[in-house]
Length: 196
Image 1 (cartoon, rainbow, N blue to C red):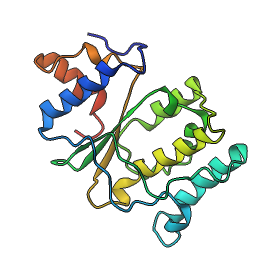
Image 2 (image 1 turned 90 degrees about the horizontal axis):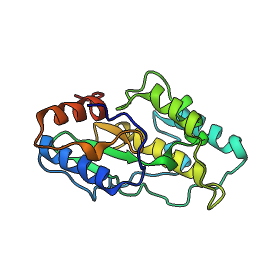
Image 3 (image 1 turned 120 degrees about the vertical axis):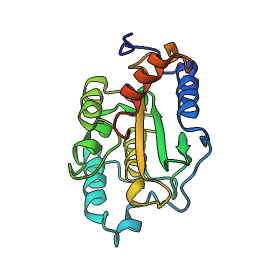
Image 4 (image 1 turned 180 degrees about the vertical axis):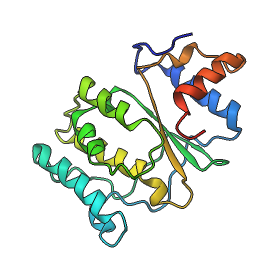
């Protein structure tokens, strides 16, 4: 069964299938998880071991289109899914996450950092999709920056060991059933292979 096909990025059934699969595999999942006190402001990382890395990424985003005030929320908002038993955050990414600013951010990730998804695949998808959301005009940089903070949560928040990203619109997740062992294997392979 091949699920690697173009599909509606806003398919609510896909998201529901992902949640069902995660619940089937790990039991409790939290759809309202918020890592407490995680700042989105670059100045709050000045004395952190992430200072140089995050400053480099932030500067690259600012320099792209000269938007310098895209951080509007002082703390990181809720994550899509959290698996308490594994301390893993799962982000489901729709098309608007595959932008050129997101590519810029990813291209500046140190290769030594452990990422819970295929970094090269994501970079290529961002370069080819080049989605645009200019409402407000800095929205792509803002989303790329907030996604960066989520990716680095394992180094910021003690309750997170890994951030995993599951792309929507590239796979037909809604074609999978938790009752079908082969489907569960497919889900593990395409969504979870970076941390299992």
